[in-house]
Length: 133
Image (cartoon, rainbow, N blue to C red; front, top):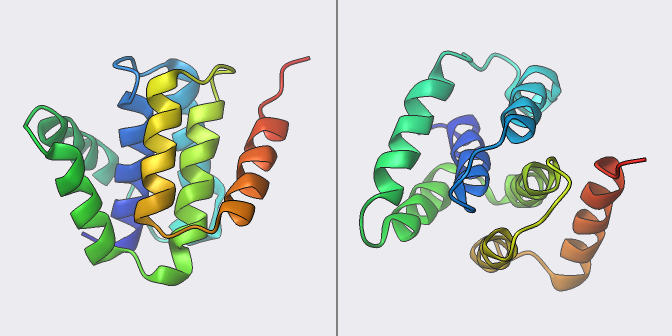
């Protein structure tokens, strides 16, 4: 798994957290992959394979731990805040945060060792970007 693969896997995991992958979340993931410099050179055809891997892992006991293990192996620490920001953006993209998404974000924050103050700033930015009129 590449760092880019792990970022996509994390976004898919957040999208699936509430047992329903919404169109707004998929569009947010697609937009991120197409626009952010961290995804330069990324083969978008990999999204389908990565998604299936995430879905398969989420079906088994300790699947989330396995996803976090893949994330720890593939993601350089300098991209931890980027990963958390992308996770927050996907969670906020449909305009509502479910309890399951909030719990998952808390776990991600812990797994990525994101300082609480930095996390609050990232979360506020996501909320502001996806605010509805």
